Image (cartoon, rainbow, N blue to C red; front, side):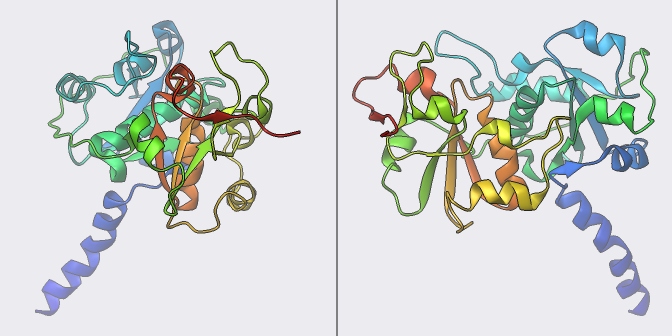
Length: 289
């Protein structure tokens, strides 16, 4: 019995870490765990040659449209589950994998959308975001390579949740006591500066947390106390659901991650103002001067 108890004490911390992957990881953390067979690094870029030029050793290339495809219905849609399962398995991802998303240069928002999409697909406890991306990795003194990364096909089951919501969900929650709609765009666009959409301003009753304020000049997420200063005026109650949106469902993903770091219950309205502003019966308003 004593041996059984000791064995349990030894394995429980490992299971706990695997079950609850941290939202953010540092370059040092990733370097320390890079040879862990469960860790899969996905380096996000719109162009393959950026990955081919330099990438974290062992990482795989992830093109954004694989997880957030454009279609006649709009930009950045939720992906097809069957196709995405095949894709992620080809990148070496299995049910027990710990996925680390890495962005290149200043492409924080598109990488954040990849993080959000993986959480939506049921991998909430298995995905982390490399704070500062590839630049932070290099600035920490860690190596990059041009060498192709080998991969062993994974075995994965995806179960989408309610992280991504539609316009009907937003409309239903405009005056809800349990949810708050959050505009993630810069304040000038929230207030009503023209953007080229059919209607300007913001969704009626929405609050504003600009995505640009979530990261610093080096593309690192700001410290928790600084992030909280933006969220508290919107809601000090972390039991409330925050449904964030932007122009097309990309930059709002940065606010999504910031909220997740702080422990909020976050969702994304995928259609965002690309859709909402084109449907006249859906309410919008401008900030009163």
